[in-house]
Amino acid sequence: MQPFSSPEKYALLSSLSDLESGSVRQWFFLELAATETKGPRTKRARCWMVLLARLGPALLAPSLIQRGLHGAALYLPASQHRFQLIRQSLNDALLLGVSLITLLAGFNRLTASMQFSLWLLAITGAAWQIWRTRITQPTEPENTLPGAEASLGLYGILIAKELEPALALSLIKGLRQDINTHLAALQNQLPELAPSSTSRYAKAFKASSWLLSLIPSTWLLGILPAAWGWIVCCLLLIGLSYLINRHWQTPALLALSGLCVYALAKLAHWL
Image (tube, rainbow, N blue to C red):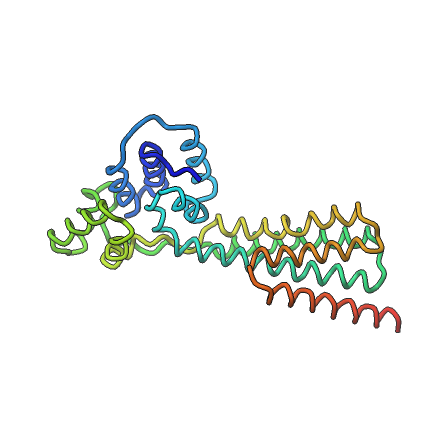
């Protein structure tokens, strides 16, 4: 994994500053960009700038940090929160998907019925997430600091927080020298730096998680033999659960739930 060059870091930090226009974070990234070398934008930098604009910084923060853009550490708490939301949404989709497949298999329903039911479940789950997004959009907290465009940079914002000039200069100097060491101290003095943990990007991914995890199963059900194709789909969904959670408790719960639903459906069908 090739780290970003200094001109690439400058381009990405400037892009982050533009994305955060009007907030304290705008000047935070401008301070970091000032430590890098300005140069022509490479193709890789332009691609990452498009991704930042489309997906948002929080979802890309771990990848940016791995490539040497340590300023993205500002988004790590929000990133962890959003990935946790996406993981929960995927687990919900997988649990309902496995339960639905085993339920219909227990009642000896046709493959077409399973496919239609999975499609309906995926679309309904995605619609539910979109509806929840529409009614739970976060409200921005009231900001009592001077606007980013009206202030004199990060130093001016710190002074507006009634910090001693020497302390403000020390924080900015430390930020430029080693962000990993001094970011926490700066956030303690300037809590407004922390980005919101809720975003339309994470909600959109939660809605997509229902479609991306369930729709491939409908395709597999159509090409595999009806006698055991549903078993393969369930095993793949359970395997996907392991890849998402990185432990066996959740996949084991999925398998147990599927077996119980299948047994109860078989019993009800037999009776």
